[in-house]
Image: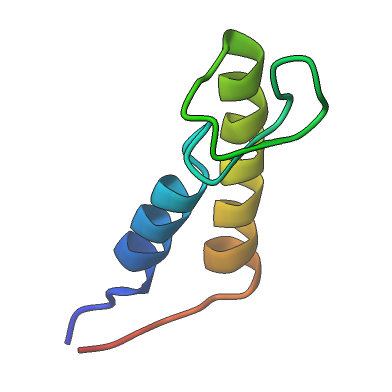
Length: 68
């Protein structure tokens, strides 16, 4: 049996946290923009930090597993 939780969680977080796709922190001229499809270096850095923290939370701290 293979544990599929890590790749599924990583892919879902990567898609959801892509800057400008759903939301962008910090936005252009505002602290938060929704669906503007633009990005900046600051936004990439903030989303990278959020992605890393959520990945650590789900995989390391909560030990989520999905065996198929």
